[in-house]
Image (cartoon, rainbow, N blue to C red; front, top):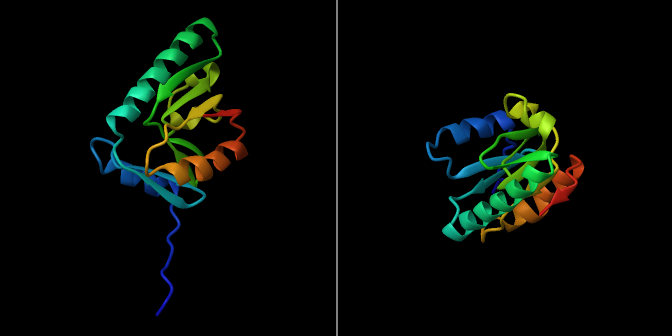
Length: 138
């Protein structure tokens, strides 16, 4: 019996997978060639995202250091890395540029944990954010 072949994915391959779904679900991400697949979020997940967006938006209206946005977003730090944090804050200078490719730094990345996202969010993406210098990860 042969060993199964493990396929390594690229950001371009993942963009093509995401383009196949009109509603954006399932959501595909890739970290160092590893494909991460997330099903559509539950209502409690979306309520948490909405509350975080509201609180961060209020704060950032007073403290003009960045802009907060929710997924989907094609944030990439290389050909085998493409993630879509549930909520993220990017610096104002990058927020004013056109397109996701202009976003090279994040001030904050937030992943709202779901039953099927634990390993990807707690380990794989956490390590990526640390390597890419994201100072805050919730």
